[in-house]
Image (cartoon, rainbow over all chains, first blue to last red; front, side, top):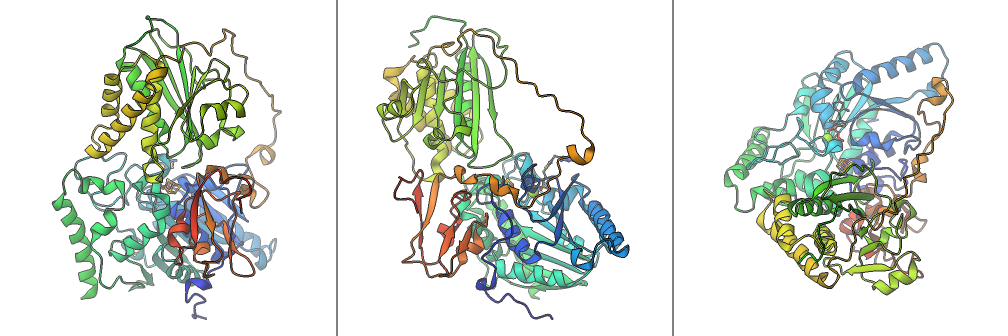
Length: 305
Length: 313
Ligand SMILES: Cc1ncc(C[n+]2csc(CCOP(=O)(O)OP(=O)(O)O)c2C)c(N)n1
Ligand code: SF4
Ligand SMILES: [Mg+2]
């Protein structure tokens, strides 16, 4: 039962369920992760989507999904999911649909929603023990509206609303810790660039009931400023530099699923993106670079002890 | 330099490009340069929900008088085509409202004669030779477009252009500003012989614009009129392959049949045939080229679009 189907990348489906022709940017890292996720979830899913780039997946009369999709306000996707789950449960109970017609209730939102506007609705849904899967694709900003800062914007990054010399002075919110503190059935961080780890976690989440939440790093060529072809490389570097720890928490117990071992310096990652270019030109911003590296080192030191 | 006497005619300039190529920036530079040259200016980009690679438009109007016109430019005096592959795409509307008097500036490897032969209304074609072929530097082409357009208008000096670029890129790293300046000023110089070729108001035939076609929709019940989609996978009717400027092509002799490209493709448009060879759906592939980078055997190569007939896989 707990044996995984995914041992290597060869075990991933090469026939993809999500339809092509969407309006997402060429090279969108969020879409790359969603491909893998949808292949595993399968057709019997209903997506509840809060305003963000992925709202563009389903723009009337076009949809890349094989099943239903519902659009909600930015703060309300988990509340929408509650309504959908309840409706399905009532239909099941009244035997108006059979168990074979039941659907997996999947919330799909960006980080603007997940880390900010929708946080309280998520907290409440976990509190109620809602049986749903939450997928946050984290492009570290309000992508859809031109990449303004969000609660997920990392230290030192420039965004449309933060053009200061050293970049964003605050810190990325630790959503994993916030969600995990609710002790839901499952929480994990994933990255499309590490599809086997991602697939295993989706598989695991599907086998559980109750609130299950995934935060997927979503490298964004448009908002982060790099060539679309580098999307997977940028994601891999985020993991290799220790900036994006791949981990999971089952009922509160946290495990790192793919610790980076000997970590690459964060600069290797930062240099790939225009949003950090001001840290290197016209002269190196040693202090900010040091701050970013130090935060990563402290994180891993705490775990390695 | 300007041969023109002060006229109140309205310049109508339309830009065509793809998201990510900097066409919006080019139109802002040109607009700002007009402004510095003492004009009233309007500049506005237009694009839909689609992203990088999709067609975008930008409109610049400039006049010594107040500008009361708004919106889409249907009869331009100058059309700037930053991406030549758009000309053959009807939805891109590059040739819309183009007449014998319209100047069409095309960023192209072909000659003006080639273009004139190909498309009937074209007569005043000016070629701007592409400077950069690396996609990372494509935005520099847009600076070149702005520079060339500025010269063709005949009323903008090099100094106006330079200041407009410096203002557009204020706060950016010096090397970027310099690279854009070089491109723009080079392109400006290239156009020296055609300076003033664009005649303000030439596109305007003095006719009043036709009123829009109204369609009266009967009131429908919510279950009919709500934008509910009742079919799966309808997105596949959208041909996002048109966004592509580079085409990934698999070399079957080198391919090791590992399927990695299929797993990493953000669009999910690479499937494997019975032999395990990747098959790319070019109708939808947006040309992100993630597969080119990820293929461990380096079996996928990027070819510029449009791929000549006969060489298409
Ligand atoms: C309450 C509310 N405020 C603002 C908006 C405008 N808006 C639409 S999408 C978006 C950005 C959402 O960011 P995120 O959730 O990170 O998704 P992304 O666009 O990055 O995919 C914003 C601000 C909105 N739809 N609703
Ligand atoms: S802006 Fe970023 S997250 Fe949004 S569709 Fe484009 S690449 Fe994806
Ligand atoms: Mg976002």
